[in-house]
Image 1 (spheres, rainbow, N blue to C red):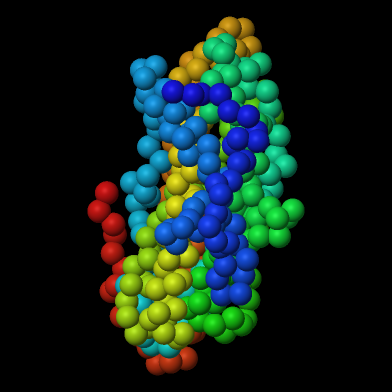
Image 2: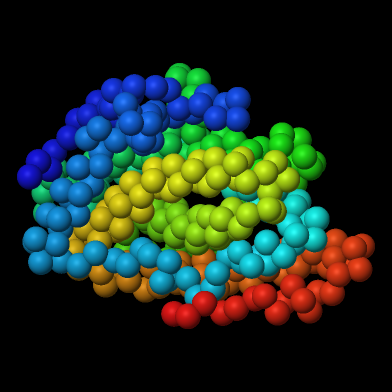
Length: 337
Ligand SMILES: [Fe+2]
Ligand SMILES: [Fe+2]
């Protein structure tokens, strides 16, 4: 099992039979000879992430859970609520969610230029064969380009893919562009891991924030998938909705790489022996309480805030159409853990 990869390999593309194009956009990845979508920069990256993950477990360590089980709730609005809104002619709620998701994806492009601190200075074990040892060797760069596109290629990334899905469902410029929140990451709470150098703490918090944003995105994928499977609700018709669903499936396929390597990196750090002031410490001792706090913030705190904000927008929309908010609320359902 190969565990060491060059930057060129982690960025390498498959040969594509056809370019990836939809709704007038030129997009990353490509199609193989059977018309199946192939994720960008995945020629070696997919196998590399699998190898690091298996190796970590083979060394006797566990992988942190990064599934939707971490979230206690569905997206808001949930699929049933979106469908009800669309049947009542209120499509702009889904339009806004799709647009905002695209704009936030574009911000992920910043990862392309992010330089992680030298983790080998912190970790006692040799990390050359770990995912952690490849962060600056192509992993973060590939991730950033997946989210916001590679400016050199002129091909759109996830940002553009969400806009393509949105345009397929509603038509381009169907509604005005919504206001996009400044940040969806947890705000700076001051030093949380004072035993670690500040750049290491900042990088760890960034990786955890990004991973939880990916987990929340996974919940949104499921919601959109569910909404688009309902026939007769998309303004541009069922065929266009099916194409949009396929586009969302392609984004989701790409995201599997992100929710693949980030948990491995955090798990490797949990398992590592870290050099701290006055000695060494097991990574889990430092990371676990911080990870729990990060999960809680994304799963509960920020959700409550976002639900309150979105409800404030919904109330006048429903009132203007003489619709009862309680009918919308009846469609909400706490997701089984
Ligand atoms: Fe993405
Ligand atoms: Fe992602």
